[in-house]
Amino acid sequence: MAKELKDLTKRAENYSQWYNELVVKADLAEQSAVRGCMVIKPYGYAIWEKMQRQLDDMFKQTGVQNAYFPLLIPKSFLSREAEHVEGFAKECAVVTHHRLKNDPDGKGVVVDPDARLEEELIIRPTSETIIWNTYRNWISSYRDLPLLCNQWCNVMRWEMRTRLFLRTAEFLWQEGHTAHATKEEAQAKAIEMLNVYSDFAEKYMAVPVVKGVKTANERFAGALETYTIEAMMQDGKALQSGTSHFLGQNFAKAFDVKYINKENQLEYVWATSWGVSTRLMGALIMTHSDDNGLVLPPHLAPIQVVIIPVYKTDDQLQTINEVVNPIVERLRQLNVSVKYDNADNKRPGFKFADYELKGVPVRLVLGARDIENGTVEVMRRDTLEKHNAPLAGIEEYVKNLLEDIQQGIYDKALRHREEMTFKVDTWDEFKEQIEKGGFILAHWDGTTETEEKIKEETKATIRCIPMDAPEEEGKCIYTGKPSKRRVIFARNY
Image (tube, rainbow, N blue to C red; front, side, top):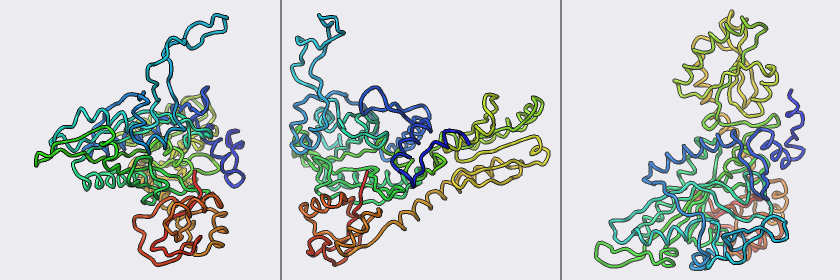
């Protein structure tokens, strides 16, 4: 086995270290020269591109169009929505000057004090303010609504504790911002986009998620309601994997965005915003991967199939090439991404370990004897099972196998979540179970005060109030006060 795999920390020994090492060893990303910022390497970016491409198609199916808005936001814009600025103030990076000059002491360059900006600019932590200031110029009549825009961009939030993909100072994301004539339309759009995220997570990432509503304490700054999808990682911790916000008329009022309705009356528009980020890469890694490296769902794997020849002579390689090249072409015709690695730069064993580490879903190995027998060795990455399959019809066989793997890793993740979801009814049970991890379904009295006390004492937060949670009379685990439904508590990333 390759040295990289021997050196990979086991999940059971140190899950956090395993994750950090795997991101680097699998060539996904690495730390940069800028504190808290990462370099996404080509293999990692290829996964993000597949995510982006699929999500973009799904957004556009709902009528959303892409646009782009400035990276820099006037500081005064943030102050117009009080909750919004309070929520992001501690994370803002501020541009104060526009020029450098040579240090008179010969020590490089310094900020030119004569180049101070009249108004300081914020590097966007999110774009509600700059977008709603723009929407004021785009909206005047009900005929201009709904306005459905999304942008793919980077944002900056000055995080103190960072971890590749999960929490970085700069990260990539998409942010949708929509304007509507009525409250009902806006609320429906916010939920529609949450369902898009849920479908993407489950059908493409193979990550089962719980759809729910955030508590007032956990809402997006400036939102009236925040909807979320929550996923469970292998260590039992939760990862917020996407959010969609009903913003009411808060930003419309802050930026004076009005429209003339069909009755010729002037009204403020209603708003939503919604987003997912490169944090999804972290979810992908931590949900499926194992002690041998990445396990990627076929729907998002940059390389779905790798074919590796085993040979002793150039003549044998030539014979294998003649057999494999038509297979590669037929797989591509079936929209399967395939790599034929016949480069003579590494031993087959090293290639096996490398592609295993990178999570390629299917590996085909072909030698001279296999050709004589009309078979090929097939290995599926999710289970590491190997078997021989007929060469004839191998393309359709592989296509079907990829779908089996996609479903299999989803089913495995769902079983894990079900096994790690617990109902508790007492405070003692709660404190014992939270140390073991998982989702805890428990009653809560609905107050922020109780929510904060539980978090302070156990480091567990209310991840969401599940949308499908049935009404159920009970008592709050902490205060004993009446409760009508259970919520999900967990420790989280």
